[in-house]
Image (tube, rainbow, N blue to C red; front, top):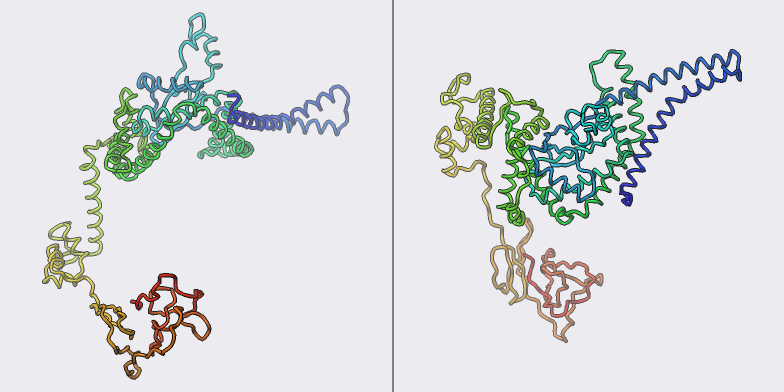
Length: 579
């Protein structure tokens, strides 16, 4: 561990946190040290007089007050119970194979094994320190051979001293969706960086810095607890202010320390199942997406009705398995379903799944911690009848209550109840367009609405479609003229449509070509000296000579400037008019 850069950075940051603690202690002891020096100087006769006596008493009173305040802060920090994540504890008897897998992984990584294993209804895994005395009954007891003294009496003072000196490893918390969806090899690869974090955590400086930070955080939580008297609020307010001041001072160092621990764990875990871990990360994202969708779309409606699904982990496995089988992008994932799932490492996976499902309902919905008459479990076989059908009926009843409030009724008396009751036809009658009913022969009710749609009555009036008038451009034969309606050979004399309101024009004559040598195949030159392009052409290339004739219709033959000097090689220069 000494060669790992992350571990060295974590230890340096831990020492910085401990220096902040030492400075706070020095500030608390400074007035007492000054008072002791003044008392010794007065006793030995080195100083005297009324001014030194007044200074001695003032410093002594200040030292006593500071020591009392520091003692109160230290007492609250020491006795405050750090926050612990709600988990489902897993004993070694309930999962011997899982404990064996974690211990083998710790041996391969050459780090201490976690003291216990717990499950959380979340897609995450971490190490949690529960060495605080307030958490001792909930943590797993250490091995008996480490506590029994040579004389064989576990209750002897030597046993209690050994128990206090024995460093307790943190608890490994595993996400329950990982345990159900992943295979055994994938779970081992995913847990390798987490288990590797027990190595840096066992260092005394890092452990002391973590205890100090957790104690300050717990003290702030205690000071923020309401329901105390005026004196208690004043005292705890001062304690909370000091704790927040110390937390602000060591916040950066604590964050960098945790980053160093994580970097050291990741560096050490690269030697164990590194290739499998890269593939397993895809399963982590898939499990997270499936778990989030299951909680928000399936479990939440049941929780709102006072029921909680008792097999959430099995449900997410079923949903992801169906997705892997029908999605062609997940064909590679379907082959892994034949391997041993990680939930087989538990002796009773059904009971553990039920406990994790109840904890998920308590964490994500705020339900009771124990099942009762108004908080009962529901199996997946009963979910359609107990939850889906009930939810639809509740929504329908809510909709009918809105219709009752609006006075919607089939009877002549709006205040009288509907003779047919809350039926679907009543909703369709309210949502159907009255004009559609009249076009359907005056039928009423749901059948009238269906008859109106069958008769083809339009719900909204439509504007009749009128074909556009085809336009024609006079071109020399035999070039074809493209129109919006059809394509045909251009006549010798076609009439160009005039703008509305203008007098009729005479048919354009075909211009004669002047005798002489052939002109070079270049574009027309306008008055400004630029090459002209015919707007009738689809192409941006310049039109060859003689293909764009001057007519009386400017919009179709007006030239536009171009920087190209001539047509491309092999180009005909004419693609027909713009359609």
